[in-house]
Amino acid sequence: MSEHRARISWRHSDGEFLKGRFSRKHTWTFDGGLEVPASPSPNVVPPPYSDATAVDPEEAFVASIASCHMLTFLFVAYRKKFEVTEYEDEAVGTMSKNERGIPWISAVTLHPRIRFAGNRAPSPDILSDMHKAAHERCFISNSVLTAVTVSPTETD
Image (cartoon, rainbow, N blue to C red; front, side, top):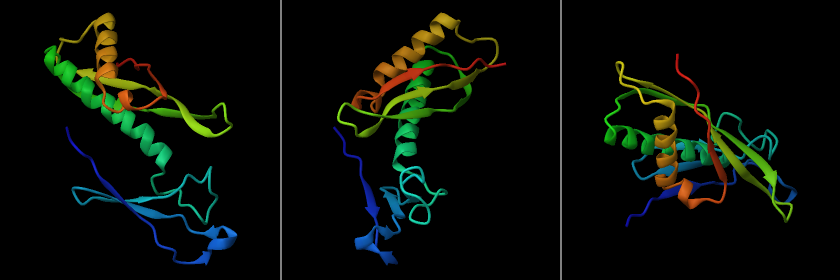
């Protein structure tokens, strides 16, 4: 099949590592050359050892699920001849503790808001089936144990 790569780079720059007082800010570099500032969530590691303006792994996880669902939904819509003109999602990941007491993102809820071209929009039942098909075919959703729920938002 295929491989997908990311380079994660961190270098100790200041602080006392052995006392846990050091920056966790780092960089993600993707195969196309894009560099993204990354950090643990300030909810996990307090500032100044984290950076709230950087992407944290938890929100990247949620974004990857939402992005994969969107891309797969667009494919499903195209195959069904429904022209999508806009797609937005306010995805939310919920952290809880597993049976061993270790935090994990146990649920992700997607809230897609989709606009279709002209007067050719799917009925609510067909739209629900399209989201189900997108979820079942999404590479990322098929790769994780996290419960993923799709709760579409009505368009005006």
